[in-house]
Image 1 (cartoon, rainbow, N blue to C red):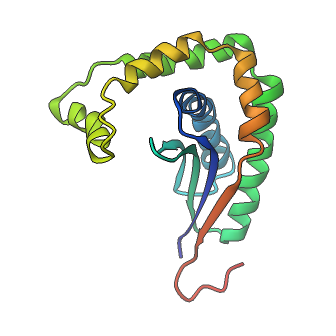
Image 2: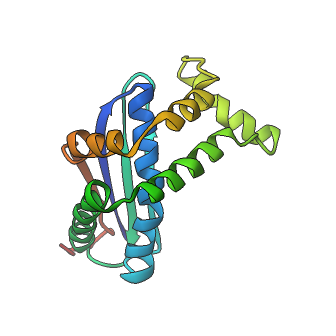
Image 3: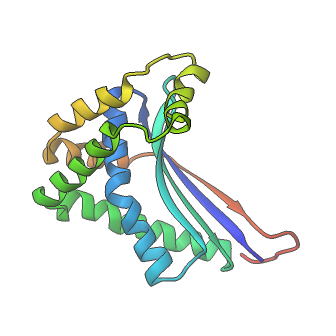
Length: 178
């Protein structure tokens, strides 16, 4: 009975600034997405928002919902939430909130791995992509510390809101749900 919806926004070509800005948007939106769609609307069992990035491609945001509800209803609700979220980022996010989210993300990036397994995981993507950019977490943290709310809002208005979206809908076998 479960279906799933994945909405991916392809925001920008990969570079340090775009990666920082997308990661910060995910930091702000991730918990808000979960709180609204999972907790308040009780839309699905799995509700998550996360950034993605390919060092030789693009950066973006991915919104995932697994639900027993009709997939097209889930799509409508996710898109409605995204419209509200973009308005929040451009008009309602305060300077104080921005600095708190930014500080939390910088702290995560600067946190030392707790195990060899975690450190391996942090570095493996750089090996498999052949970029060997092992210092990228530190570089991202350094860049984020310089980032201000005006620059973030400009990125949201010019890139995030205008980003092409791919919507993948997974329906249960034999489902005629629309």
